[in-house]
Length: 402
Ligand code: CS2
Ligand code: MG
Image (cartoon, rainbow, N blue to C red; front, top):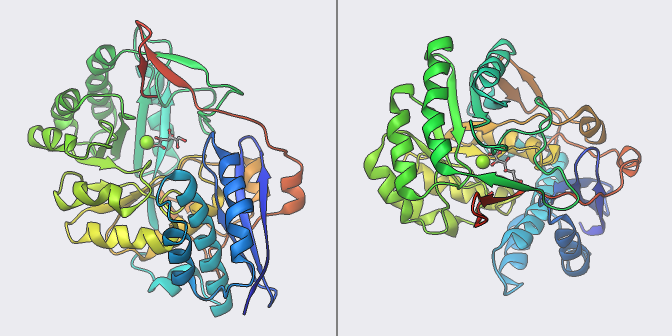
């Protein structure tokens, strides 16, 4: 069996997505997501110029060997561009293998460990009152877990709040727009938000919050401590994690659970955080961390330390990643939660999929493969449009982490 041809499809049904399609000599094809928000065309070139020429003629059944070929064989390891390209190949190959086996991917991975996948939705508002209402709306829609992000008094913009609600999209401009940030204002506000949410909705719904890499370790430790009475499911990206040691300080001061990993690419980025038990949830997902083949190594390492998975699932991860992640989540023994930021109806039309939402859970569906397809005619209606995430500066002009 051989990979006969491959193509990269770029489409922008409201936001950009990059998809790799691998076609075999037996007519079976597989698709993988290669979207890297704001750097999409770098992965397109990586795939078209450096991966596809090597891939043609390879045996698609040899998923592990192909993974090692592109990881070790490139000499230049890791990094978001390389690992998104490897992930796309890997996801497409698992799709092909599961289709050939006539099984939904979760069955090939070892079968279901649970009936459905608990997801968290994004509630966001311009101020405390609107955010509280939004959380209520998610509870009414059946969500068991909700991430709350709000505008902060005295700041014009805050992470997690933007145009639109249900289909909020952070990559909103042809060149990065400028936002102004002040951690002091943010820290004074966030505990009030969660105090109010618990007053209004009680302790039944799981509540989550994303610090989006903006605090220092000590600031994050203080926030974690201040949030303890409100029993968060997690505080995410409390501080940038390039220096994994930084989490030790946060950990020493708070029992608020910590989640990290949406920007990680390999097990090496997670290793110290996991082995030192400095986090509770690992956020790596299919497209960012080298596909199913590599993600399951990360999950297995995490399981040794009772750390659970909590895969990234923002709108910049295409429905292909969502579908593959849901099969992974259905199988993985140490599953924690799955992020679910809904795609627009236009995106759903480009990517017909088997997964579905009911009462706070997502179900991967029973279609052989990962259950997500790409309608090429529909995709062709939406050509690529440059779109970037905003950047952040402090009030005095200092560049900060968006
Ligand atoms: C976020 C993302 O979903 C999350 O937790 O941190 O919105 C992130 O900002 C985007 O995926 C960046 O592309
Ligand atoms: Mg995040």
